[in-house]
Image (tube, rainbow, N blue to C red; front, side, top):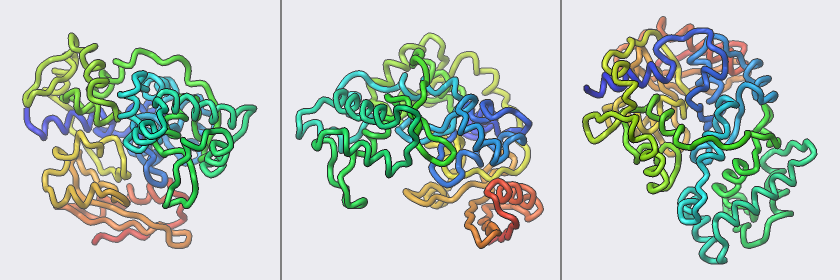
Length: 361
């Protein structure tokens, strides 16, 4: 088993070996990060021919099939409504030390400085969010921050030099939306909803291994943003379902045959930054060249990835030029304009552009 075989397995499990007319929930089975403009929309469209911008927006507003919400790592993802509680509330740590690690160093410092347990801080901010969004209110991020200022004790409102204001620490308020049951609508406003009771959190390990196996408990911790002991307990809960793999990794025993003979991927896809395939677990196998890897995975403003037959074939960026979308591709290896044209036009249409200007650097 080499990196190419593992990558082929993960490409297929990510839904990128072929593209069909699968519904939105199936396209979002592996939660798609919305880290950049239209990222979740483009990630789902890379997996399903049935995805349109209007259909995606309507589904996000309705919240019946898919939701847009803060879940793993406190980041906004598009995911099936049926899995919202699994990747949200079920993964919230109940122990103060583990929750502190999940909420980050700023919250840990505030908790220590003011003697506020992280669990109490999360409960307070979640209660403020639920109160602010009660009665069917819909608030954008600015409005939500103001509502929290009016409801949360001053000790939980540190000064932010970037915003030049006092507001709840980013990881604390993001995870508080998880606890409160808030999601976003298509206008990026927060609305209150009910994700339902949290299921067995060990199911998240099974899902992770289906997309990113073979892997380790540490890989689960990195992906979900959990403290190592928390991730290890969840991993141990499914240990009887695992098979050993090289490098100290494991996979679901039920996936051994699929890993041994993964289907070949066909076609070109323009994957947005934050796409499920571009997560940390896949980066070395997808981009063996360290210099290219640094260009693709930047701290901010990362480009997207051009995938051709399941392999990295280039980097891409897009920006609006009036009513046109200017899309620039930097090839890595062999990549023809004909390979890109149809996919680039599809991205332009999803972004609402009337025309496309495709450039190959």
